[in-house]
Image 1 (cartoon, one colour):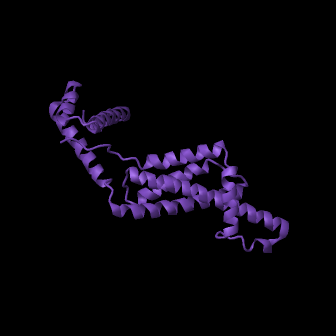
Image 2: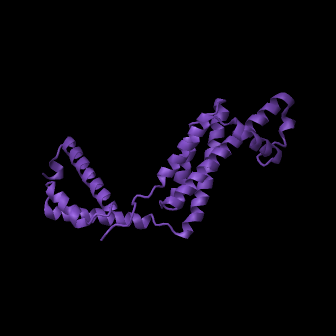
Image 3: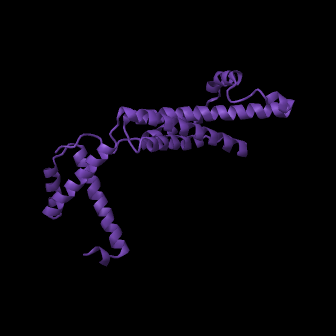
Length: 221
């Protein structure tokens, strides 16, 4: 039946069926199956022989184009690192801002940092993916969480000294204060708890998953 004669429900069912077949073909080709065998299985399931061959060829071509697009070159690592660091700092600052206006440190904000770092790497590398970029994004997420913790710690220390001793006592407590940073490093690990570890792991998993390659292995001709 022509597309324009289908009801919305029928169109949805057809789209779901095509998506299901597409995912099946992608899975088989990723396993290394020959395209002729995959086409034959589609024919056995009721698809028209000519359409099945054409469909498999289209899917294969799309996978090859995706693999080429996601191919990583040495020149991609610097943009990936820059994108990851920028996203990490923005995420850390955003976390600090949230803590400042709510007077509470929300651990789940770490997930946002993981998402930002994954997005930063994707944007700066023009949507390239792969294990090496997953590592960059994950390390960026850890850096962003550490930066956010430091920004929050600095804000809390400055606020405490201002309230107790006046504005003048906090003038040397800036972002690059070696003394404040030293105190932060000494206390950061002792202040972490199980929930902190959970949010860190989830943030890394978010950024890791975003950079997972779409095509797992070379496709057979």
